[in-house]
Image (cartoon, rainbow, N blue to C red):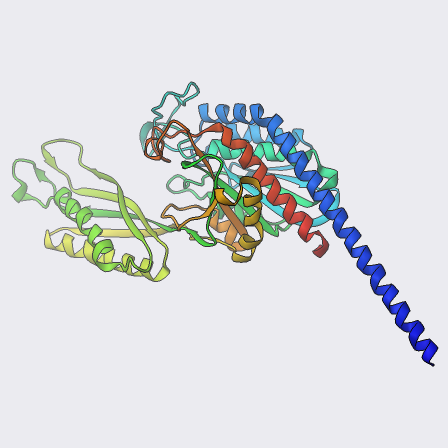
Length: 448
């Protein structure tokens, strides 16, 4: 009996050791595979830089407004097909999705880039600046990639080329999502990430996680920024129509002036932020972006229309601001003998980075740029409809810095005619997308 016990003990030890060694060997093999893939990314990203820059400049010179990105979408789809991917077009009107199935089983990772431009007339010294115009809200305007979406497309196309070259070694599937209308669809139309989600962009195959990046013209090149949890604000769009009584400009007492009334409303809305919003809890913004009234200098018009945006990082504050807006507008209109309609609609949800995914993947950025070049930032008041993807699956969204070395952030701001970025940042951006996808797939392949 004693002999049998000793024999069983040693058999158990050998069994445990065998599987421990097997696990170590398997883990070492996996690490070696990951390292080799990342080395390939480093090499290929450098070689692809001229191509990526050429793409970016072409998209920049031929910008297209939201839901009208036909040329851009065609170039994207053609390139993804040339890489042997399954390609879906016409998603959320002009969106494109490329599906790259790796040679080994594993999770489904999505990488997203937005593709639309803005109704801004470009004003800088770039040789490839946009000279295009378009009809927007009934007016002819310049069209410009004034937020960097052209660079997002170019970097994701580069990442697609890199990752497709190592297809047989990838553990899982990558979905390349090229999203239209991030800046918001035209009035009366649906679009953007919300519509892509509705039309199944995260299904077939079902996405496990999604990564997105945004170029930043305001941060020193070679750095990344990110934030766990809430990243950007809820974005509510409002339209206020003030109804007065038309009269001759020489006899204002004969009418009710909607322009004066609307002007009082513009100023009063700011007191909602300064006097009704608990800014020590979170920031909030009300911005009137357009004021339209009248068509002749000596006629007091019948109506005046204000449109703008409300940005909040706290749902309770959002509700209070909307309530106070309706009360303030109604009160001022009544005091002038006018009436007013207030319409408020949600444009973008709050973007929230998944805390667990952020903790897991943010060290990858530090591996790429160094600990000292990766920082956590405060939540911003900008809106980002990547939020709709991140509501459905865990998401991680980060910023890649691209401030031109000879410029100040105030000289090249996003959504301005002078917007500019340093194209040398594209290699780091491409590598970040590839590193995040590869590391996640390698780590989570066993779960699939």
